[in-house]
Length: 244
Ligand SMILES: [Zn+2]
Image (cartoon, rainbow, N blue to C red; front, side):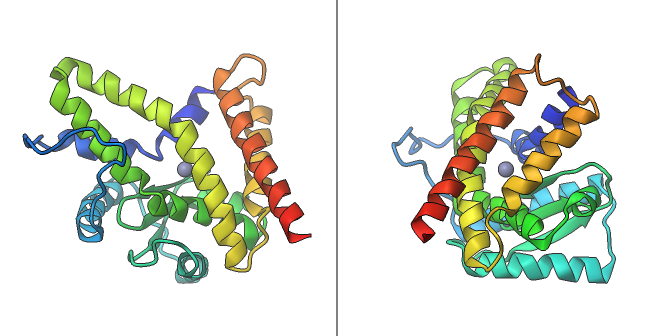
């Protein structure tokens, strides 16, 4: 379970690490608003490039040109039908056998080699990519950024990392569910089977349980994953009804 939790946390961890190294600049104009402030595309791209640099130092890259071409082809199809097609999306394949996908601000998407081997169809990969593009469309990184800055401006340094971790935990489930739904819609609009993401996630959960990476009975976190899958199932069946 711990391993799985860590895997999922990687989604936002590079972003958090990066943010926490930034010096906070006092900003008198900043206040909590109903609508969170948004970064401009240029700001987000600048940020994202720095996070990308950090990630590229942490991993070896899979540079097989055919593999990269196939994946980036799916990315471009999904991005074209998304709500954020002004960002220069790219997908980088990381040389890792763990099964993982995550994104950085500014349109950087990362898939592990292990994930691509585990995926059975292009529809599944498109579902994963749709989910990552949706994180960008929903401006999740920028929302997290402003909330972290807000926490850091109001609390002593010793409290900041635990408050940031709490923020991450409370947002993780909500962000994942929202990105699943929007991602599936993008995958479908781009011509892929919308069931791809659910098929992948269900098989991944089975795989983790069979490998003993967490036990069904003892894990509150498994409940979170199951809730996410149920949310996605419900959405997919409503999609089906609307299409009939
Ligand atoms: Zn996600």
